[in-house]
Image 1 (cartoon, rainbow, N blue to C red):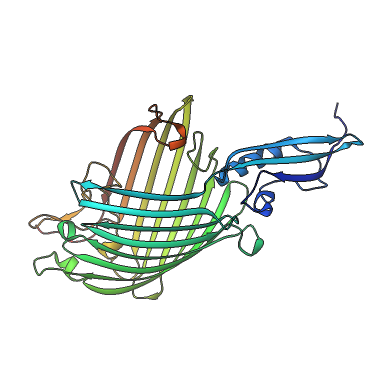
Image 2: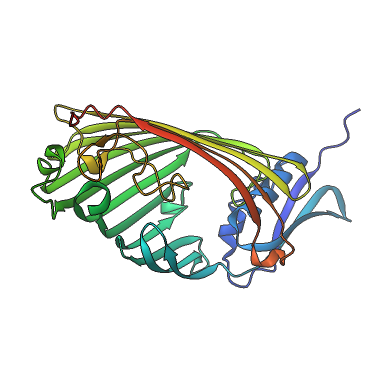
Length: 364
């Protein structure tokens, strides 16, 4: 037999000294005057946890003594640091010495703005990028962001060229349903392929010079993970389509599908399977080598950068990139006896992948 309905009287937020009330209230799926719903309360608690702003969250209902049909909701949060500064330095057998410094603030001004910057300096690549994102643009459930990047990449040992890129990107994202999101992005970039020797593959020599790319990208994402950060159960799937040719002098269509699943059979041991597949097609022109798919280095551990895929067999066998790509990773993560607060875990993994179908003539 169904009991009497109980309605929400007031929603009280306590414990937030930095985060403004509205950032917390918009994660609560109940409003004052709504009927009490335990399922929505559980979802609200998870939404608050997924912000990553709080060490602990708790939502309690407190019935009014003078009116049992009404109850107050007490939302208690325990804030944690949302700013991160990362330093790293080391030596890679493929690319030599490198250094990186990055800064990220996920709750700028206490309004959930996300600001990030990163400076990377290495023998083979140098880059600086800055981004700003507002998850509730114009006070609506509409994410909006902007980012700029300057990068220099030395591909002389892999493909006989160097590249300099300057780019700006704008994006917006919104929910079509609770797990389904849609994202639109526009990017404008200028890049130059240079330092190409006369002995380089003819395909690479032909692409030397400056090009401008104006592209729009559409992405659908279906997210059923239990947590946004460090998920242990569930899955996520995305489909992305990038069209270049809205101005500029580069035209192509790049389609990618990506998926990941997570499973925790016993406490603190999590298995994950990650896979992606990509197809690139030129529109009235062959795609440039720097727009093609490559695997190796961090994208396929155990191989040199651009170490997997079609090559032009001359001298050191220049990598040409491919129009088709598949990669996957099976990984298990587990604690290694270091405090959980440091976020350090151990992992074992297996990577697999391939790049093919360059459609470029190769030296016989």
